Image: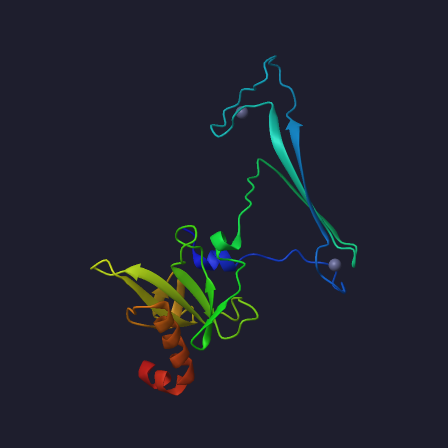
Length: 203
Ligand SMILES: [Zn+2]
Ligand SMILES: [Zn+2]
């Protein structure tokens, strides 16, 4: 299972020239070709080597991706061997969907547990413009309690020294088990409204 923070964080934009007036890639193209390995002494198509992961084929799939920005003239070429490709959709990745406003916060969905289903995790921000490590405010994560019922835990305020561990992140505050995502979002919103009180409680 993917960690939701890996779905959203650790991905770097492919940058343009510093002075690019419209930093949007105009052309994105892929080239698929077949590379041939240098022939060894063997006359057969397959070579022999000791690498257990190698299929010992004489040919390999090569992929090149190129991006062009007409505004700044930047061309980026990314190439590799044996790459995998996937064409999927935001309904299956979660990532790429618009955040939804719930209570006073915005929820960014993780990957749905099953196609067309609801995600079992959301990251939370206090505005809809961007989800970054800097704007991350909370997390809502689902689990099943001892009777098998769906429950949700909310956590807020990421903090490396926080006492609460939810997903692979540490947080200053975390909720008890709640019954709905909306309730979890409300818990985070309410926490934000009364910061002094939580400060007193945590001392
Ligand atoms: Zn550009
Ligand atoms: Zn080999």
